[in-house]
Length: 135
Image 1: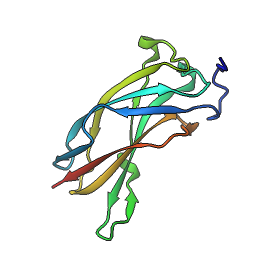
Image 2 (image 1 turned 45 degrees about the horizontal axis):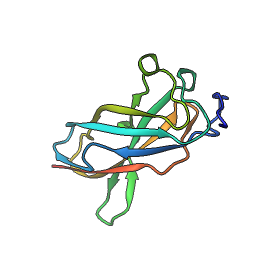
Image 3 (image 1 turned 30 degrees about the vertical axis):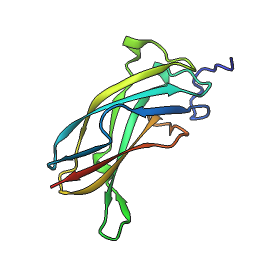
């Protein structure tokens, strides 16, 4: 197959994500809830420690008019533990498990979850979403 090593860029990083945990959460501000996402390597680049692969998320507050504003201070990561799993070759997958902390203010939110090579690029795939309501 067309398997390549990480070249320091985001080229060739692609994943298919499957949300295993719940697609919505209702709770309090500053709560933590479980996150479990299975990620499958659909690109030609091996997910290795030198690529610093992570599952990451960004928060968006839903405003009364239906528009959204990003809340960057609450973004987060779950690392790929290559020292435990080894490299993730094309066609293989990895189960990311962690916790997400909700923003400090009550509100209606969407958290968008995707893959990234830290400090390099977000993967070229659509994020999965979790709807969050805190009161």
